[in-house]
Length: 357
Picture 1 (cartoon, rainbow, N blue to C red):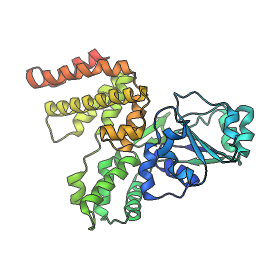
Picture 2 (picture 1 turned 180 degrees about the vertical axis):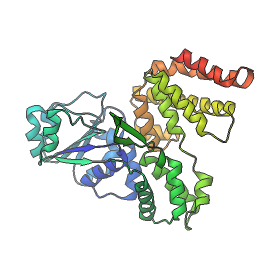
Picture 3 (picture 1 turned 90 degrees about the vertical axis):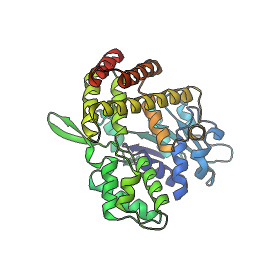
Picture 4 (picture 1 turned 60 degrees about the vertical axis):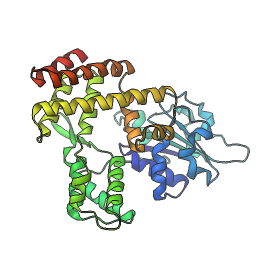
C-alpha cells in the first residue's frame, strides 16, 4: 500500500505511522521522535527506535532521508523468505516510482512518503493525489484556538487537568497568535505556525510533572514556560544562512521590539547569546550528521529533547557548515564589544551583520 502524508505536523505523522504498524501508546510518542536517526537506516539495528512497534507484527522498518542512496524500486515490493511485510518511510523525499507505482500500491509492504508539501500545480502530482487507491492525508498544525483544544485534549489523554486560563496562557506563550500569513497577489493562501507539537508536548509534560496530581493553573504556566522567542532566532539563522540580509534585519528588529522587558542593549545581548547558542548547536548537529550518529545517541550525549533534535536537524540542513563556523567567532566578537564598548549596541550589531553577509 502507498501512503502520502503531507503537512508540517511531524508529531501527528509519527503517531499515524505508528498506528499503521502497532497501536499507539503514550510512551511510544517519545520513541517516535527519535526516528530521524543516522542517514543509513536500512539496517534493522540502526532503526530500533522507530521499529519497536513494527516488530510486534513481524514487519521490518527502513527509513530513507534526503542524503541517502535511494533503493531500487523493486526492493520496495519484495518480501523475505518468511513473507514478512516491510514498512518503508521516505522522510522529506519524493521517490521516483515511475512505472512501478501500481506495484507499490498493490504491495503488501507499506510505502510511506512524508513531505511538508507537494506542488499541486504540477500535473503528475495532481494525478497522483487524485488516485483513490493511494492513501493521502494532510497534517496541518492546529491554528488559532484549535491549539487550545489540542492542549486540553492532550492533557486529558495523559490523565492530567488544566484550567482554561492556563490553556490560553500556554497557547499564547507557544506562539498561537504569531502565525505568519503567506500571501499571493495580496491574498492569504496559507498560514505558517511558529511552533511545533513536539514543543507543546514537552511543555505539557513539564507542567504536569510540576503540578503532580493537581490541576495546572495559569500561574504554573507563567512560572515555567518562556515566550516562544527562540523560533524567531531560528528564523534569523535561516535568513543568515540563505543570504537574506533584509529579512534578517527585519526579524532582528521584531525581536528587539518584542522584548519589552529590556532596553535595546540588553535585548541585543540576549539576542546575540541566543544566536550564539543556536549556532553552536547547529555546528554540533552538523558534526553528528556527518558522523552518522543516531538520534537516540544525540539525545544521550546532549540532553536535548527528541523534538529539539528534529528541529536542529531540519535547520542544519539549510545552512552550510562553513557559514556556521564563520559566523560563530563574529558573534563572540559582538558579545565582547557589547559588554565593553561605548559604541551604540545597534551600530555594533549592524557592523557584525555587515561582516556576516
